[in-house]
Image (spheres, one colour):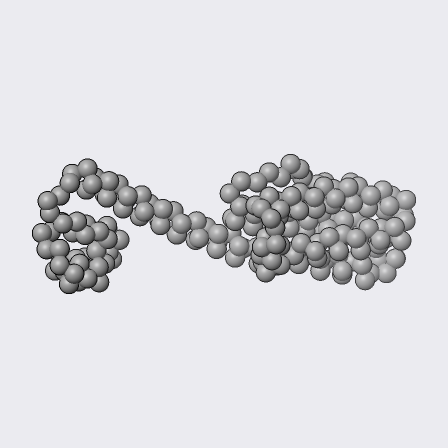
Length: 212
């Protein structure tokens, strides 16, 4: 027990699994060992096969705990970088209402496909100088962005929508460049969120929009 106490104060030793091999099988002895953090208590005579299985099980448990801790740190790192672009609470709610792990990935895939089509229509509307049609498409894009927690993209669409027809026409190229850039950032942030929480997913559309 003294050795276990010493290990508990050493940060390099405290995560090492501990197995007690002893002839003392009293309730008090077991309780004292558990209180100090002993993982497993085996009484003599020791069955070698049981001891080996116990060691293997403890090693697997420690490995799983380490992996889980590493994944949690990775998730936090990814999400902390995306908080200004996407609404994590909204995405958590969408993930919670999904029937399976594919619900949110499928939702994002649909958004990507719809957005690609909307950008093409926007370019066509601007080429015809049809600002009313462009504004309608911008409004639809704002709604799509808001529905999936794409906060920054939604706010950009709202800001552009408030512009006058003259401003939208005069700054068409700059506005489209800004829209496409924010869309790409949002798409990457959404995929980062999904990869952090969903082990297997497929996003069939790979986008690299270029302002026409």
